[in-house]
Image (cartoon, rainbow, N blue to C red; front, side, top):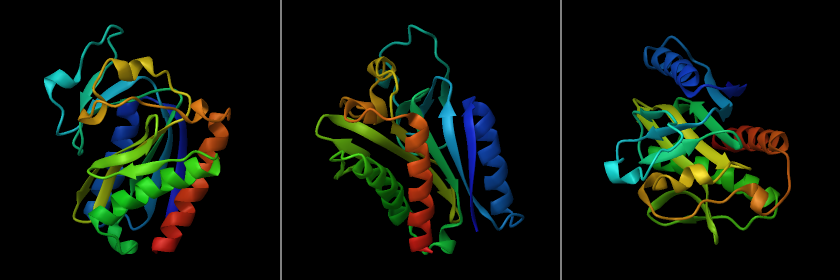
Length: 204
């Protein structure tokens, strides 16, 4: 059974601990249910395994910078961006790790299409792009078929925070859904939730 938990807006560390609690219980066989945490964070930079010192240009507002056990490089999370953190057993959905990343991208792509945004994948670069820049981000960790971390979608985030870093190690602009369509974040979140349930029920 897949349960969606909407945590609204919370500190990154608090939600990371919640993820880790579910993740460890699933690894130990104490938890059969699957979960997806959905919400927003207060401003934070998170650094995956591929982050290099030169990926941080400056940090004039002293935003917290956290090293995280996930793939990818540095990224920004903050208000105006929706994050999704699935803690799943991939065997429940017959997904390989590669298929799982593809599935997360597909959830973001479906959401963008809903608002008439021409979004696409870019070969060799995880995430979702438009002609103008990157709109969706994916960074996961999988251990013994159990997933942690996940994906994010820019809705109306302040893009200046991305200008201080080389997001995900590729020098490309970032864009928001609001660059294409004036829509409230809460509506996008509900659309994302529907796409999560639809996509994983199809995979099941």
